[in-house]
Length: 401
Image (tube, rainbow, N blue to C red):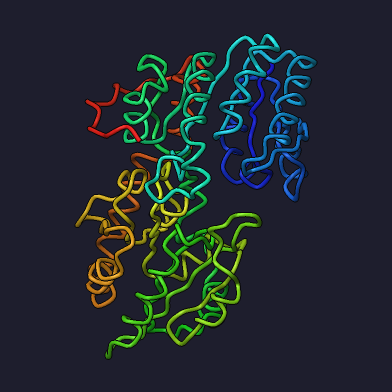
């Protein structure tokens, strides 16, 4: 059996899909990843996966999008895959047509977060093309066998908007996290000390971290504003740390100059970091203040696996990981006061942080462990023999955008 995953960028292919790729290889299938070339090619090939390079523009570009669809069709026609699994908007839409035209046996889709397309804060261009994209989605999903959703909010939205039929949907929350890799005892104490020294955090400083692309719609402004207020309150040293870069070509990117100018005794911008586990290990609280609909944010799952309390906005995806008052707090999007109110008791009380952190670890191991998620994907999305879980309960109410 030949299986291909179509992924929009090289880093995502490695960082978010390598567990699934390994599980698919474990079935004895021949597995390929169709994604742009980049820094992670060698890592992907090291798994035993065949990398087939292709160019995909992350933003709307009709000429490049048509070229992507044509190139993908030619690859799929040549390779004759048994299963093609499309991940994210462009592969979901253009990949579904290319796969059907190429005669692929089974076509799978993935909604890993409805994102800005269905957000009330969508850029003007997205608002203008939204009806076209939704129409294209409907047509593509009529050519797709099953669609994986990572949270119930998005599944409900797509069903209510008649983008997908209920019997096509598969609800498996998140892409999973390796809870054996992300655990406190896997960290080197010297590395943790070096990180805290690098960000200017003393032994008693409470470190509040957000791992995210540096985009306005990820709540960067609110994060910095909260650092100013809480960093000036007397009695407890606090350091807010943003780990992540902007995104070339994205109008929501926060300028590097803006971030550098706002660095202070209470706020540090690290930029992109490869030592996420160690950074989380050196942190006391982890946040994500996104305005957009998420899938299930990996940064929060990794923090939970590291037994950290969580503060995140009350949006689809983030809701999946927080049991309010048990392992963290949900806050209102675009509301700095709400963020400050949630962080203040966690900053002040180390015992509360420990209790919430322990519950985070229990929850992520129980509900989001990578092996558990991948077993369900193979059984319910790919329809390979595996253990199934009971179906999800009734859908929540949402209004079609």
